[in-house]
Length: 250
Image (cartoon, rainbow, N blue to C red; front, side):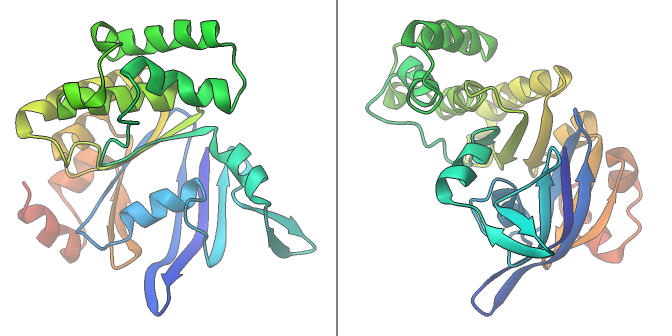
């Protein structure tokens, strides 16, 4: 589903990604861990072309992200074409980014009706199904300010699913939550993984990574330091840098 080939990204003189290469199979869950500033979130944003890569290539479902290739040269896609690619990739951010002036239900139907031109009645039916799936159907008419952080994040997950994505990206989805609210969001994510959704998750929740991920990648300084099966990496990391990082968390 995802193939990254020597992906590089800089912001001015700051080199954030220094040649990331990895693959995520269809239906697989990849967890990205590492210290702040290691490039995890930037890589996630490159996958759906919220950030433009400076070198290398990123493919989602066999399609080059953000560019077309002709005679070995890359040409950036028109923003409208790039947006069409992006709508097949759901993304859940650290902060919930719900529309504050719309109810939970209205947040879910906005993109399908405006972007995909889905009939409102069909979008409402689907939205209620998704709110039920994340345990929020009783709050369909509540505004974000009336919801807890965990409830808002569950609505944000449902909103991303409303576009029927083939891939879901999660950028530290629990880090802005109070500890007692983390579990309810992770439960939804576990169920989503069990349903076969391909997921890339930037997280500090090592228990979730150990239990749910098929592949664990430790990043630092814009490179992949170590990767492998979560239980193996967490129990017996081979690289000194990984050992030092995990010793502070586990």
